[in-house]
Length: 383
Image 1 (cartoon, rainbow, N blue to C red):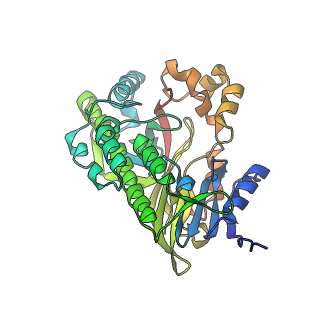
Image 2: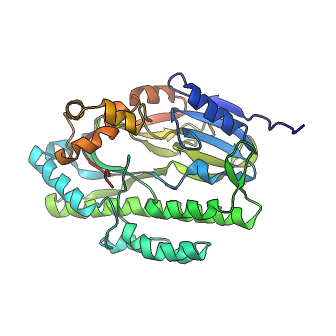
Image 3: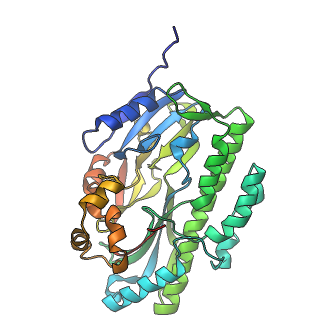
């Protein structure tokens, strides 16, 4: 009789009672080969292979599908030397139009500032010839682009200091997708069906290297968008970014860290690293606040936290349940492109969990430093 895989320990900070589907997914993960511990974040919701809003530890196996294709997806935020009082409705419209011009959703010709393109990781560093060829062609065209789905660039204001901030949510674009697809060809299957690579093999080492490359590209991509908007705000209004205020974090990665006295590979799928005093950004929805936080370094949470509000409805459910009129009402105080309202329904605030409930559930995981409210949002929707 085959010996059953021991079930890993599971610790949950869920903000609500978990559905049976989520429970089954978490149980599958906890029984997968080499999984030592699972931490469930307050924003947990169903994902394709692993629930979004989970962190888990392994000793030797890497699970590429647990991270998915949007490797390095995360947040970057920077303050402007301007206050909310500088932003009239006319200025907001002009700025939104400028953001739409300088931050494309899809591929573009390379028009980002040279200071950013100089920071792009070299495609020659990737492990496989097809990936190197793909990156040489696509990295220049995808750098400085937002992407679709829940990705966005937002203008916000700090409620305490009345200061304007820019915040962008995006990832490694098609580069991360290509890296995931290329390395999945070399995986083995756990008894639970999840695909993995062994870190002791060349295939495992190559994936870990290329995943880090994608994280670096994702960070550079976000900075390219912030740089492009910074040039626009300086030219239009004389507002400049305060570089020393820059905050960056990502929430789709695998990183080697020490936990419980042992070196482990921490997989974060829609979960933010929150080691003690580590800064982070937790976004809300289009009409709800976002938070700048610092981690408390809770070991049982694998020093992680929620990465956002988390979906309360699937995209298809949101499209069927949320009307255009309802969305307009929800976005009453936020400037969005009115032409995009129909497509924005799947990203409506009511399609997400209550960010205040999420933050309350993780008050032992992070400490809030700053609360910011949205003023205008540029969303990456469409095909």
